[in-house]
Amino acid sequence: MNAETEVENDSIFYPPGGILIWIIVFVEVITFCMGIGSLLYDKTQDLSGFVSMQSHLHRGFAFWNTIFLLTSGFLLATGVHAKENKNETIFSLSMMGSILFGFCFLILKFAEFYDKWTLGFNLDSNLFFSYYWLLTGFHYLHVVVGMIILFIVLLNRKTISLVNLEAGGIFWHMCDLIWLLLYPALYLIQ
Image 1 (cartoon, rainbow, N blue to C red):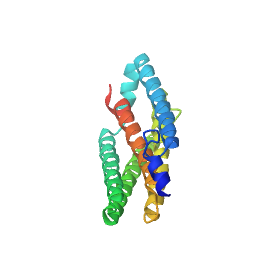
Image 2: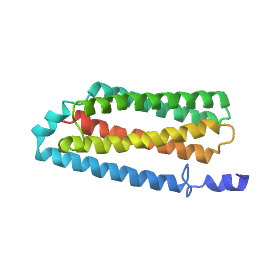
Image 3: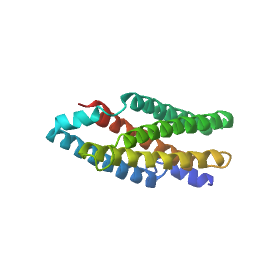
């Protein structure tokens, strides 16, 4: 990237990470909000049934997964800041920490998925678990994609441009945001 492009990208008309990542984030957040809105509406139609099924979820797992994703996001933001300040050691350590906490999320969420599956709660069990599997499964796939992006960033840490790093970070923070919407809708609101 040359100096002229760098200056052009700093204008108010060019958001961090580029416009494409923001379009993706907008579409994904709207999609999840529609799914969560539908869940909440259907919950009003069968409150006792939804609350009964909700009691089978692991609130402790969901709490720790929230901590894992937020810590990962914090470390990623620390890494971006370190990269901007040309501190490669902090950048690398922050990226490794971000990946580690993202991996912890995936493992714990997989354990919850496995538990629900072995208890017989699948996509066809009832409406609540249809929402559970679709929303959390779709989010899980986003986290997997985000982890792949973080690995690519780490592997290319010496040559990655700030724009590409920001785009990866924005995608990862979108995963955080979506989880912060899913967590209360599925696990807390009764």
